Length: 136
Image (cartoon, helix red, strand yellow):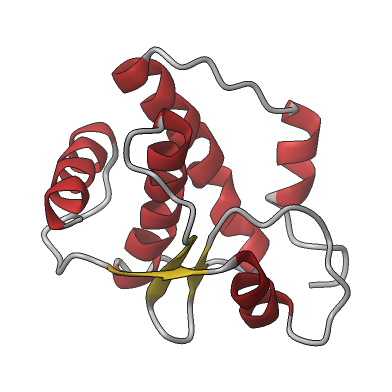
C-alpha cells in the first residue's frame, strides 16, 4: 500500500496546488457494516458508502473489498487522499460538504488521465453535495 500511496501523492502533487510534502495518510480497511456504523452512527443511512476520510481520527477508511487492480478503487483512494490533503493543508471550509468541490473532479481527472476510465457523475448532483446547506 505504501507504494500506491506514494504514487498517488506524486500524481496529486503534479496536478494540484496541494502541498504533498506531508506524511502519507493512514488507511484502514473495514467491512461495509463497520464502515456504515462508523460513518452514519445512529443517523439514517443516506446512500452507498464507498469509503470516507475520518476528520476526527485523520484516517482514510476503505472497504475490505477494495482492490488496487481496479481503477475505480484507485480513484476512490485519490478522492479520499484529497480530503486528507485538505485537512493537513489546513484549508478552511464553511462546512464539510465544500470539501467535495475538488475531490470529485480530481477523482474523475485521475481515472481518465491515468487509467483511460470514463467515469460520469451528475454535475447538478455534484453541485448540490458540495455546497453548505442553507443556514450554515
